[in-house]
Image (cartoon, rainbow, N blue to C red; front, side, top):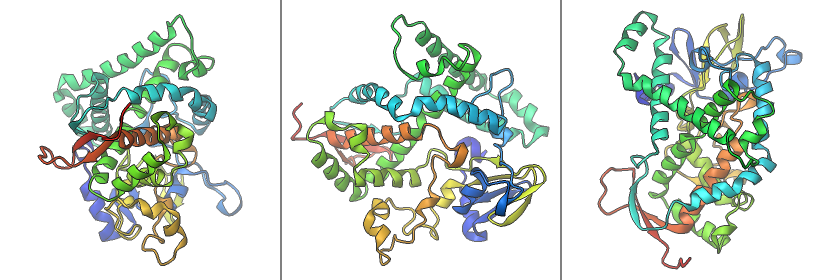
Length: 407
């Protein structure tokens, strides 16, 4: 139920009490240490000092292939299939591809408006497709959890509201309609579709992989931006970020992907936002390979479910100074180079919000570019404030257009 409702406070409470390695179920071990990222998600050589290590594949309960649907990069059953799809879909995220997609992203961000308003950064008006994606995530979490309790699974599934199941089907059909609408365009263009068409069949393969890309890239950035904004408006970091962006860019058309990637404070804010509001707060579940293997020096039998619990690791008081407070300065050069800085010893490498190794998010660079552009454009256009009358604590934000802005 914690998974279904998006909360897992009991897991976070376990680590301060029992240490960085906690068995949270008879066959599941959760880690809150940066070394586990390498042992679980990265390739460990099968010879030399690491002789005998095999890949830790994704847990099929959470990542398994959907019956009757084509395999995708997310649920690829073997490392060979995953690498094959990664090479194909990776064509969508090269520097050249991102440069070609940049104008359309600028166009979408510019549509956000420039009027004064109090907005709720979470309970706003969503596109119906996004609402269906939320239902998809909830239903997927519930179905996956039920697989641990076979005795009750069928009973619970029978009493589920029909609209929850319908939402998942509607969500998939929406994606398929978008795919075929793009395929039927008379004027062709260079985009994700044009890069994948030579490699995927126009039906099941293309539909399924585009569905995955849509879901993976929908509310992930929204989660990070909502959380980051919530923290920003309560700290001096907002003023520093605003000054950096406005000083660097006199005109909005100057906020390009390349230019934004060079701003130290903006990038530090985003890294800190990914630490405090990661798109995936729990663990990306993988399985110890057949036989046995070790994680962080701990022997585990084959079939054990393992993962890095990101929420607990990123907010650990033993890993980060002032762990629950947004402090972009922990990512900047003074903290890195000065042993006297209270943030010098922070475990920055522990933050892997896009995962790492061969299983890392293939759209990481696009995601970072979107985060930089949206956040920078927001503070360039508006002064952000906490409203005098707050209806929902932590979510209401006052947007006031810049007094000196005359476009």
